[in-house]
Length: 271
Image (cartoon, rainbow, N blue to C red):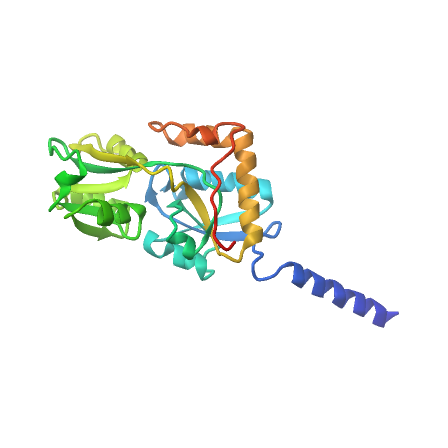
């Protein structure tokens, strides 16, 4: 009898291991490491020592729905996707635009926001179109979509790269930059929090074709499914709309994300 019990126990253990393969890191109750930023309000930031913002509060809601926990870790954006791909982080949460180039490194959940890229300038600078920034110093966060925009769509600009948003804004304020290329909501937040700084919005372009999404390792299909399922539920019951209204005071909610809307599907090649 003892031999039979031992065999049954061993078989059950084998099945359990098979069910939790290398791509399954979202088992019920498991705590997942999330790479995020600390200085990009209203999307991702630290407040009183706690990680918050639209992206991170939405991810907390999804985790609760899908039965796993999240542990946020501050990092720089430039290395975030590589850190997800190499398992340092299970999830990347940082208003990550779903470009085709980035899909070669990671897989993305369905989208949870769209946005606008804008160039913040000194007031009275009269820099209102792409051509006017030729020869000007433009600050960007390294490896961001704004980096791609400044490099590829602003001919003649002198692109200066920074590890985070605060460093770029400090240089713009000090006169070391002619423009600072950022997501428009982050620009709004900075101007609202610094009314004494004479800054203004220059050129703005919509980036709806590459919605923001959570990043996961390409072989982690179980976690990708959980993120998409939880996000769909959050759209359906109005949670996404509520969080968007809470954190984005100046941006309209995309119709696809309104309560009961179809969502923003993202196609992952090879996943």
